[in-house]
Image 1 (tube, helix red, strand yellow):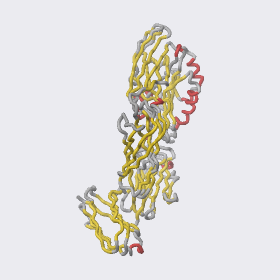
Image 2: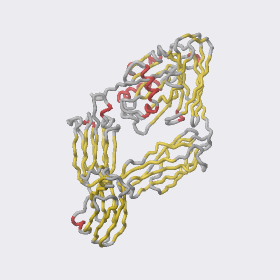
Image 3: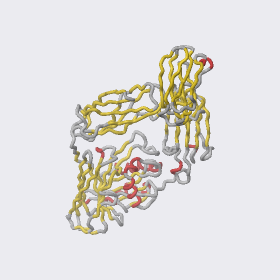
Image 4: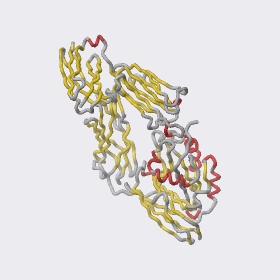
Length: 568
């Protein structure tokens, strides 16, 4: 069988109370975005919680391994500490009021909640909090409703995010929606030591603050507070509040993040670029208009966004499609927000920058695949982007051995753009070494007979589907070569200056492109229309690192590719 879900580190959480000492039961649930069994049981857990909000509140601790989980990565120390506080080494697991129930979510139901909720609590907890653009401030008042004595009492004050939603699965198990996710425990995962002996009516007030970080939506921040015996793990009471006071020292302020829609790699051709990003209003004034400038390789594209965004509200801003012609080897895209309702941003200026590259290889290509411990999960396809026609594909590798390498030769067409799609049925990519019993990561390399690499994957990250685009260049046919004689590149090897001599039999549009061995487009010289006859053109390679390069010489008739060695 595949992957066994064990965790070395652990974490715990508890939830508690309501006023008048009526008990509010706390469910602490431990899960992970890359845990397939968690995805099966979490909907049932959430259905019980959603149907009994007058009796129960919850804290969800996201964990990894197995796999990855972005919410766990935001606060692994607190999630890990709470998980290990309770018995059990696997997920999913649940703790209800600390020691009332500990175990697998299949082993408890709504009756477990009802039975615990029927037990009165010795405490009332009142929690109030405010959210500003930088800070969460919390005030907790604990009042004993009866005389009560216990040992080693701790007050746990927890900031949660009520709802986090992703456009794509957050991990490899397909889940995109997460509720009551722990963001921060105040002052830390150990809680606050409080007195062990209480008189009826006695109160204590505690204040905490957190300079918030890694919050997806400030409008979703809520508080869960509970009192727990740190030795027996019993939770005596819990409280929940999701109605903060919102505060801001700014009138016009925002942040922008999550820049998307910019490919990692494209073909060396004209294409449409449509970035998007999320903006969050941190100012007291509603945002109704944003003046935005998108810059692509130095060329500016201004546009105006219109809407109505209140304090701490966010939205996705989609940039109208921009046509990019003849992209460079490395292309820079920057997005700046120039003004908010005609006013400057009172927070830091917003400037988002991203890059994408172009890749080309020769028409004689090879796809090399080395499998991890589960070859049957891997499938791939290669198609033309012009009409989506399938060129080659592979699947059903169940008979292959772990660590085995296969090579698939592929003949490409000169000037065509191709899309390579690599899929993993399990959703963990070919990152096999993360699992017990497997020490192998898979890999994929697409290259040509020059050793130029169009795309490669080293097995270091998870995916369900990953795609890359690249173009193919080839040699001239005999008929085409009649239009181009005497092509000569010298000196080769060169220390920097490379001379290119050629003789055209007719006027031709001519271009020279230089690619490194990874397929990266590093130099482009457009010579324009050149007349019939003998010509010489020199290019300076001295700014490049020494090594092997491919020079593509292109006319209206086609492309010739030549290898050149650069030495310093």
